[in-house]
Length: 220
Image (cartoon, rainbow, N blue to C red; front, side):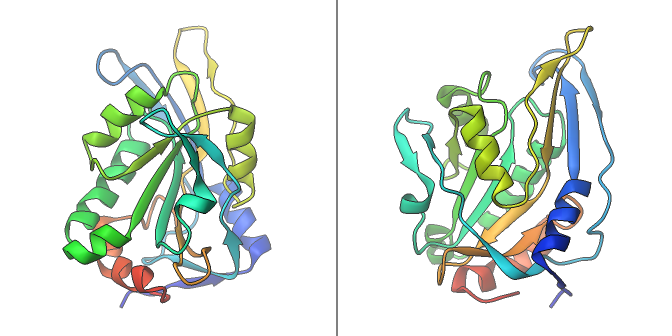
């Protein structure tokens, strides 16, 4: 079993502020990508256990089918991984979702059916339901993609200690989007996030080892 750290809620918010990823680049399907800022903190293996778990964000957004999706209602009683990012991200977001998808594929069929993976875009102007569906489908068609009003998304992210800023265009035409790189794991027992993964520890190895416990509502 990999070692998990325990953080107070205040420390978790400080860690979140230090775990910001600034992504600049054009569409990865064509065009150059910008650089990504380094992420500090959380380098230990294993998820970070919170002493004061986060409640699920009260988010009602639009899913990849163009239908209304109430995060709290739709994922109630289900183990859930929640990540805020965007599809034009040159490296951090696709790597994170790929690692989750690979770990997800290593679960038993019963475990896969229980686990809900939700990706909320931080760039809703460009991430339409259609684009989210295509992008997430390259990893795992079962993953849920959500888009909608940016202010609503930002407020939901902040409620779980994830910092998100509006995207903006640089003089050279690159789009910059800054967002926290945490993956929050919500327990099916109380619908709260007891474990947070940072960019450094959201690896295939870590997730493969710890997801079975999270799915059961246990702490890894």
